[in-house]
Image 1 (cartoon, protein in one colour):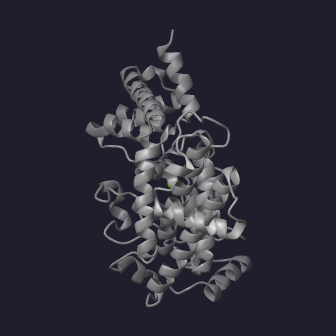
Image 2 (cartoon, rainbow, N blue to C red; image 1 turned 90 degrees about the horizontal axis):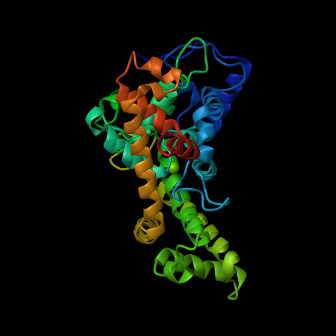
Image 3 (cartoon, rainbow, N blue to C red; image 1 turned 45 degrees about the vertical axis):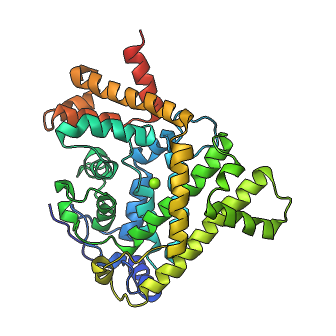
Length: 387
Ligand code: MG
């Protein structure tokens, strides 16, 4: 189904569009240039297309469920760990800062950030691994494609259409976030092209956010120490900057916070500097999409330090014995739920059973399991397997 733009605009919307024309860079995506929605709707009197999309995402059930979905640490070892929801808010906050400074469309950037993790199943990557293994013979599973399914088919809040009927550019950003671009579900979003600059900002803000908050959470959970972190150049340099600001006796939680703050600030500054350089000769959205390289990037040296930090996190945090044990349990739980519900679809709620008329049972069960929060999955698993 193709996309169509609504016709006509109110005085308030005309002012928003004019303000965008005055303030945004030529490579920014303007609300007035949207390709529109699958189902034409009358324009809103005072919200631009992307503001309306943002609000639809915030009011969706799948957004609220992010509150009880794991980011990395399964089972929420304490109440201060990030969840998918607080991670998403950190990403949105970093991305908006970057977008505003690069004169990109901040409203669109925020919307893309709020939507970027909607398709994640319970228990973080453990849940994704389990579902992609279970779905391998049935068309596969990947969280970005699941995000598209959620906003296009599974959310049902409007009497006149299924899904949230989001603008093309927001859907495109979810689709092109996928690393498996060849999938037929993504064909209509130009998978051979680069993402919009606003999407690229969210992509990098995502990694700035998780690299730094995973360190914070790992320190709090006692998985790593300052000594371990000093193995990485990025930590060492950030610690030097923190001590230069706050003095050499900085220690404990205040040290952790100051270093993490410095790491975020440094990466964002680097992102702005390198992206400004790359955007110097870019004069349209089309240029961004056809560019040989991404227009949004860290400087090469910072990028190298970030990769080193990520290798450290992989070895010391994501592969920490305690994390591996809980993620293995989570994988078995997700697989167990998938297998049991596929064998006995009467265990599905009526809403899902009705969908089996239109789609294969494996896909329906996958949608159901992927939509669960960690605690709902745990509760259902116990009720099915523990007499
Ligand atoms: Mg994310």
